[in-house]
Length: 134
Image 1 (cartoon, helix red, strand yellow):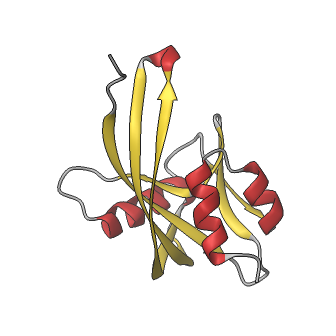
Image 2 (cartoon, rainbow, N blue to C red):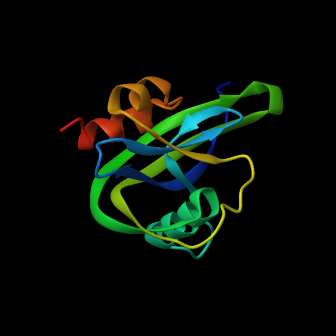
Image 3 (tube, rainbow, N blue to C red):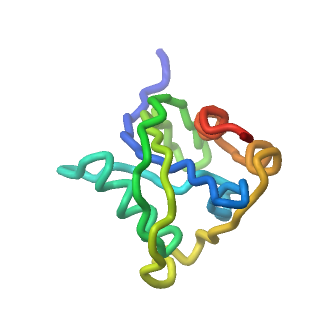
């Protein structure tokens, strides 16, 4: 028999600063785009606003929807197998609201090549490619 996967809907932000660097979060697992899971009753946009604040301390504005992508995430050590279905948005940082709420997420700004090389999820790399270096 095959492995059973739970489905998690997610929303992520690709944020490019005026200097051309990209906002990402450094976590204990590695570097990821800002964003995460959509809670029950929450829209993708509202989830993104919430996650951006929790992980970076900033309010973001959505510029455009970049697209959709999915990735299977396996964690056999914890017995977790998930299909992450994500909507990716190009965003900009609007206003610092306070410190991040998630202590294990550090907002960092990286040049395109560094961000692309350090992102641990292939579908995050794909989303970064949609905005690109230019």
